[in-house]
Length: 336
Image (cartoon, rainbow, N blue to C red; front, side, top):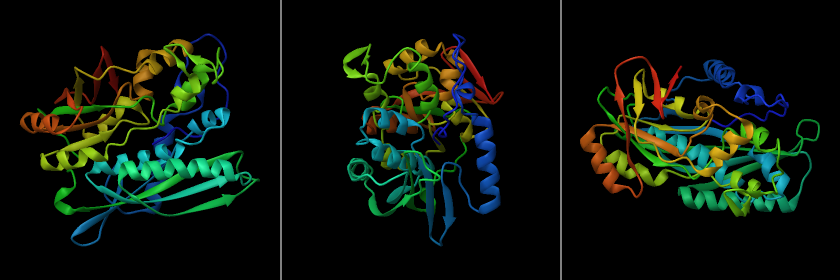
């Protein structure tokens, strides 16, 4: 789930920013999504919709890249946006235990622009190659009365044998294996943009690494986690979560437990930069961003050790416990 395209300016005072003040109310967005799903579908699944087609499940996920597009527009560089669009969808399928197989994109524009479309196409090609999916079509709509600039979204289809789907419910006593993110990924950009543009331009050098601009750091493409699926299926994975919109509270999608995160991956410098520039509270950062860890899975300790050994950069980051539902991380208590 990405942040919506919220352009309302937040309070420009020196008070600490929140995601809601920047323009995105996660609780309201999730309520609207639930209402829409309740009105339009009858399917299983949380991160992806699962349709029983006999001996297998057909899975579908739909998402876009949110206001990351505004950073791309400011830099005139859309070359990585297609990677984000595929990753945000394919990773949700992986969280369900599903193999992504095909992707369809939808590009809505104010006016056609061949150079921009070509850049987006390059990113889609790269994302499809990384995810191992086929690009099977797409649609471009020219809607000057509806769209300002452009928006892109997509739908990823996947297939999985019924016995390969993760149950979706963690168990008390499970350990949590995590894998690092590549950076800010493609959610929380409304808050990040509002924070960094208080005192900077996107073209300014990124202070922790002056070889890159602030905009380039924000555009670092979302990591794909499709390569984890084999190891996760080989283990008895009980549940998995893609850490996107809502940040670390995404873990509560794995069941009503307490998730004690004792060894998260270090947050990349972009998060400290956003936090400092926007005077954002620690709790708000962890409720909005992945903060260095982009994907987690819950399983027994023995299986976790095997998965860590089988994957390149996974490690045990915490445990699933009975108790009040929520997430403890870095001295914070993120209750729902």
